[in-house]
Length: 454
Ligand SMILES: O=C(O)C1=C[C@@H](OP(=O)(O)O)[C@@H](O)[C@H](O)C1
Ligand SMILES: C=C(OP(=O)(O)O)C(=O)O
Image 1 (tube, rainbow, N blue to C red):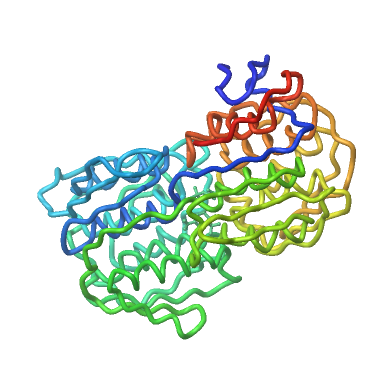
Image 2: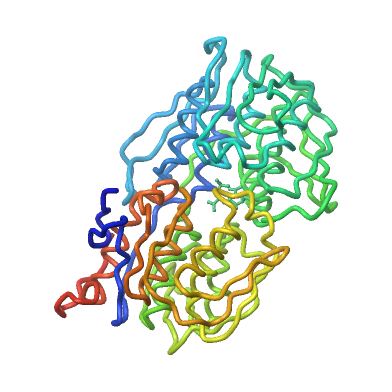
């Protein structure tokens, strides 16, 4: 496998840079995956042309763009002022598309969950498939919901990818009951299109609690910002009247979840990382770094749009609930902590890009660590770690977890660092710039630390 630019070549992939000196970095991170892909869906349904400023450009956003183009949206790249690629303009779906089209979901939950309801609003057949593991991600609630809305779905009875949606150009909508306990994205998917159903949508969740509720709040707030009146005053019920989605021009916030590994580097090395353009108010779950990292002994100060995290003398373990997509990064830090940790409320991570609970236990244990699964999370105890291969399972957050552990442990080979392209193709280069602020990886001569400017 080819080595990526962030670490030295190694036999098995990407040798994670090891640091015994502190990082001292200023950086920007690319746009939020969750916001970019919500804005793209809403723009495709809006009542006029829209613009996304500083959007994410990654595999997940590229798959969303391709899917929406296939359904008839016109999406173009135009010059913008972002550090990580052009802006996007979107002319909404106008009909007149071919009678059938295929959507590649890759491994993107946002594509496989958000696009099928939208396909119901377009005439013709849309076939969905994705990477091999995508066929194992939970989809049954979306398929059932679409049937409940009167759409014909061919899934061979599997309740998973691949399947076809036969759209008629309109969906009646109204009352719909689903079980969204496997993924918050089931709720978000239906809310994003609900205003365009003829009778609007009254969605009810019945079952174990909806996980990753921060992401549902993000959907609700994003909808309100484009003129959709979401009533979420009753728990597990969302009511949306039929109506237009107002065209918008929006700047996408940086991805605060993807800022996590860089902030973690400050914690691991006892250094400082400053992330620019941190929003004062946000619906992103990644804002929780400001709460989580101090529990581990770091300081986190948000001032003037810059989040500054400085690591302490050691990493404290603790109990971390409902960390959602932050969990792999939290787990990597816990594996380096001096006291035990418990992560709870993340049973649904078994349905993510891989079974993240099993994967984290396997990879931490493979490096000599002490980790085990519980029914809804992980227990990780202090143990001396050694080098080895850190497998990534095509999961971007497993790759970054390996990079974090490798900062503190000699000889960690991250097996496929390229999988970070799912949400942050720039990861290897940004990590290399971060490492240079500590004078370079261990074994390179000390040199004046250049600032990470990426
Ligand atoms: O709506 C979204 O953008 C997301 C919702 C969450 O999904 P789950 O509820 O399946 O965890 C999260 O983990 C994922 O990374 C992004
Ligand atoms: C769970 C994740 O992604 P997806 O949107 O594919 O569900 C994630 O990014 O951590």
